[in-house]
Image (cartoon, rainbow, N blue to C red; front, side):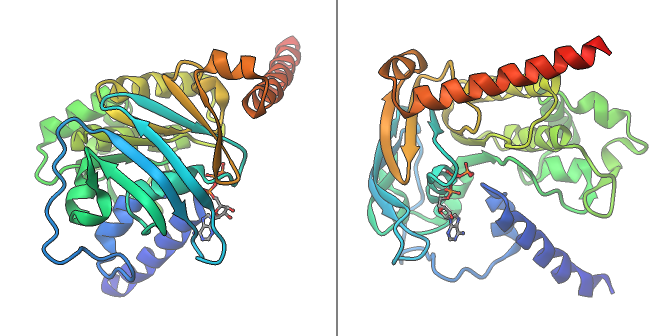
Length: 306
Ligand code: ATP
């Protein structure tokens, strides 16, 4: 009977993941072998990552060729550096992240890692080089240990625990009824958003990729959890080429470069202080979010008063 349920499970998972912003694409790829459009070029070489520079050069793309979403997007993330992508909802931020993973082929321009066009290398080698911490990870109906260990085939229990420690989730796991053997997911223990994100971080640490894509959670985690997760993310982003899809500007204040996307075009770029000074879209978004932050602070004060 479980043979029958597995595909149903899979379909449910695929449906849920597609609804999310940047989905847990790697998981999907491993589960679904059939791929409609994306194929390796015959005799395609493996991607060879030395430094890990990521480059988008005049990238044009639409999910439907009739409706272009990205209209010539160019940026470079130097090896080991961090680039944050911000912009209004629907601007195309998550699409950029999906394209880097070659979830879709582009209609114009070039995406390369260390000078190699990602469309010309094997997908397997490309996906091995990129780690993704999605905003809402889909857990497998399996043990929490399996869910972390999936980051690298053949990982030992010690390695899994070390990754969990680094992601600040080890103590939580040890407190579960069966520790690392506790079943999680739809039919097991349900983890909170913050716990799931830590599992995703542990999995990525185990994978140890040179390129990292972080899709910031849109749903608010409580502020302590959020600060803790930010810290862990910052530490895993160090030394790796990192692309952050950011929904809250407060998390990109320190970014080395911020790219502001609006309706599929880069309209501004620079560091936080420069962008605030430029008094454009970023400054307007910053002012709006600052007002929201103040509202929240006032609400908290009111709550505290009771
Ligand atoms: P948000 O901040 O709300 O997550 P975003 O900037 O990440 O937004 P994208 O998810 O990249 O935006 O979406 C950009 C555009 O592409 C939107 O108009 C969206 O409707 C469209 N789009 C996104 N995913 C698909 C898809 N799978 N098929 C067709 N259109 C899509």
